[in-house]
Length: 117
Image (tube, rainbow, N blue to C red):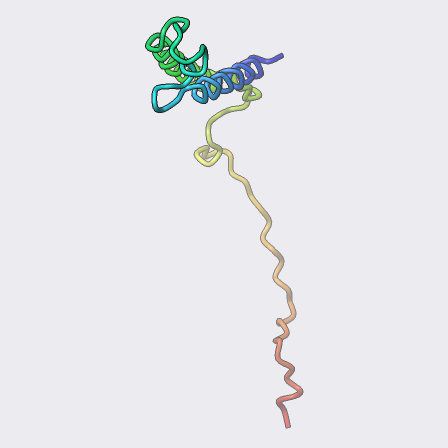
């Protein structure tokens, strides 16, 4: 298993977790904290701590996703080829044969016999 494949799997997992954390949040402040427990009962960790946890986990997962994407670029297998452009190399000239010019004149698309009287 290559290093890039490992990075790719980690990127998919972190992206999925980031989507789940974002979907759990409620933009009006309810979110996960309002869905657990009955109305008005003591909540696990309290409303403020749940919001802080979701906010911190969102930023952490987003930072981790960005770092994994940037690090995966280093792990891409380039096949050991030279990364320089061949257009800048003066010695690497390529020649293509020119198309042969026909000896006979080209026929015009208009029929000349119809216009002569």
